[in-house]
Image 1 (tube, rainbow over the protein chains, first blue to last red):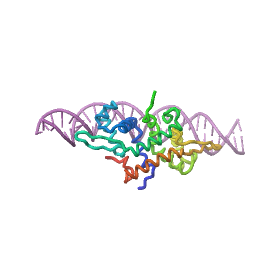
Image 2 (cartoon, rainbow over the protein chains, first blue to last red):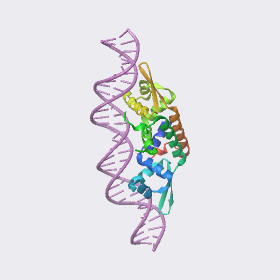
Image 3 (tube, protein in one colour):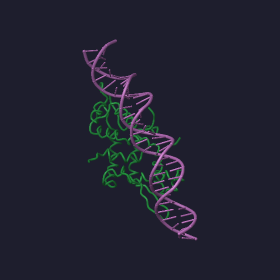
Image 4 (tube, chains in turn blue, green, brown, red):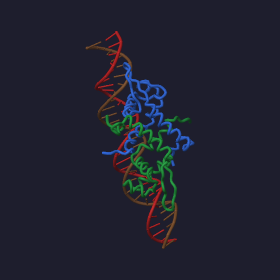
Length: 105
Length: 105
DNA sequence: AATACATATGAAAACTTCTTCATATGAAGA
DNA sequence: TCTTCATATGAAGAAGTTTTCATATGTATT
């Protein structure tokens, strides 16, 4: 069963199309962290952050390493940085008022 | 009201996180087309394709030009190509079986 | 092996987004 | 201006995703 690039992209973009997960990526880009600290830092439930980290990890947008009791998550900077760079550049050119994509008609 | 990159990205990725819209981008990348032809080519309803084109256009991922009765849509290749390139590269490295992002645990 | 800290999971409710249907609007030629 | 081809739109049901709650599992220290 052959899959086009579109199919491959779908899971990838779905993973990124969520405010919580984007906030997680933003935090982790600055500092790798474990779930509990991340949850505190985002003021969200531990359980919710855990669910969303799983989604991100499944897609290899983050990876984790156990350190004793804690499990430290870090971003895959090559992909995440690369994609954010494209979006940033696009926004500069096309979304002067920031957020044009989500604006109502 | 300041918005982080995350906020800006959200609308953008939401727009891309849809199989119909990804299929539209794939078709339009190959050949610019009007709604009716696109709908026929995708075997989808004209109305549905139109709705989805609006979403893509709002985000400047495609743009349109009227030619008589028809309105021809084309992709913003700089952004779309750029982002697909990052995903393609990511998939090669991290999703050997294509579609790992969407796989169940 | 008991306790405390840390993380993960399943299932259902709450919420969002998509698709469809019916119809309206637009453009051009007779 | 009537007709035909082309495109857009609103609203509501259908489908999908996220969050929450309660609890289970994992890890290390005593």
